[in-house]
Image (cartoon, rainbow, N blue to C red; front, top):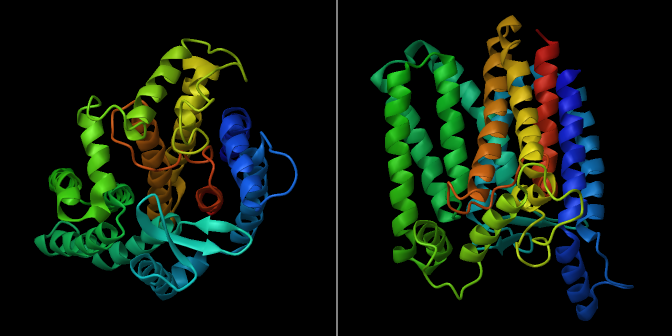
Length: 378
């Protein structure tokens, strides 16, 4: 039960943060919708909070359905997982008429009636873990050979090319790190893992740096790298540069204990996307350093609880799947936080269980339920 309690606390933490930090964004959006005739009634300060509350209920229903599915179903139906992964790749590459859409420069989105836009890449991350497990099991007797690492590089180079076309380099980075962690846990020597990681990150940085020079489609990626290196470039463009600077002001303004819940200023227009990508920075001004440490402790506790019990799991399937899912949660959480404190360029990645977005929240709920089921099967 401790892992379930940590999940509940993280979800409540996210709802409380969105309730507070999304006031301005909610009001602005509902005013715009009313002006377009797409919404009736008065503007609302709690549009995003109410949506996220609905998202949490839907995600909980999906999580309960996932709980009812035996872990052995995924183990015995590896081909179904593979087909599902490649169908998502197909959707990411080509638009289905009336369904596919472009959002913030990325084409990896689809529109679901009544639910709105969703990002298949969130499901693809989980599908990648399931797919890679089946591949690792087949190759496990060759895991420290040249043949294995050549195959691993070729396989991930295919994904690199696909996500470069979308473009979505940050999801690609998450998958690469998670894949290497799974390889290491499956028995790969650390020197090979570090060597591949080095060349992978080098290729990723070069692709992101020169992408904008090749096509206008990649311009937003180049801007993120440019503003990360030099925030003084084009200060009138209050987008990427503005987000980074205001996020740092919000985090620094929280000091040790914060300004207390609901009492802060950065949420009023200063931090764009305060309810999603920059929710950590936006809420930091209220909860301060101690609140941020509490949030980090929840993520680390989930990792500690699972890792200290993984040795009791006799099934290799459960072990590798669990390590992959745990890596997905932790890597994305720390990448999001590092973006908020400007250790990394803007990514567009959400903070697990906390940020607003129904697709990400649903996948997070599925992941934590799978971790719970794996521990129960020890």
